[in-house]
Length: 65
Image (cartoon, rainbow, N blue to C red; front, side, top):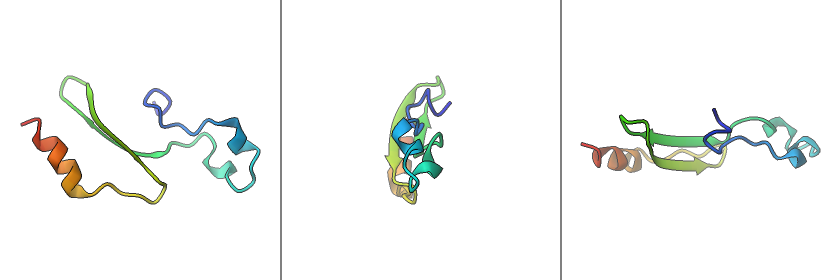
């Protein structure tokens, strides 16, 4: 599923880098808002420790009411 949504770390260079091999074939941290029809309406990809502010997510969801 992560490949389908474009958030899979599948760059072969990661497998050859001892410092980055742990992220090879793992999903990036990503946030999605998907409407009731299954359409992706919001995507935010952050760094591994990053979070999306709750206010930002709520703002996106409010648009669908």
